[in-house]
Image 1 (tube, rainbow, N blue to C red):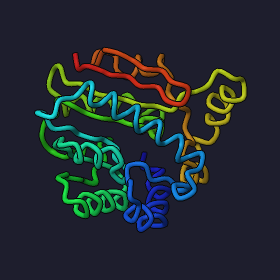
Image 2 (cartoon, rainbow, N blue to C red):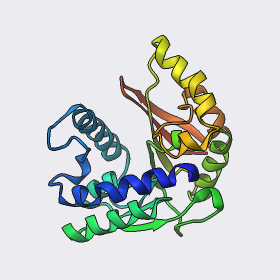
Image 3 (cartoon, rainbow, N blue to C red):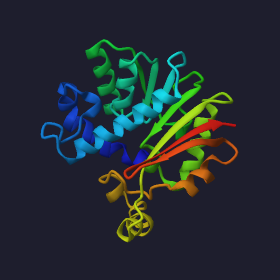
Length: 232
């Protein structure tokens, strides 16, 4: 995800005040005020994530939110009484997350760390989140990234992964398989696009988690794919 840090840092600096001023920071989008298309999609996605998280995790155990961004889900978890630790490679997003929980008086710890460099937030976690993150990591590094997460979790730990759903229509398949095989190799795209890398599908996930995690359940929707994994 290193190649995209500059993209998200610029994004965070541009919209920091808008995020902090939003009455529903977990639902903030660039078109929040207009209740536009992105906002409507985010509203559905956040609701799906919340239902899956609360149906899978327990409040008695802390949650590690890997790639937490500006703290969208971490904010909601803290709001609902979970003990949450968030990590991200964007220091700008981490600072926004800290300001958000401070503003509302919630508890949350946030660290700018890069798991691919061996950096860790400290501690062991039985409940972990990886929401809309894996697709931002170079394909050849994804197995290593999952191994680093494996090191943070005790046996039996649960990891929830979400990914954008790659639609079956031809244009979507071409964009994901062919165009992104090109864009992933050029800094111009990785610094400017939110999704320059091919998005993983189920067969990819099975390769990344082999010998580390097993799929406990999955939920496939029109926009997002969810996998609940258990450490073997």
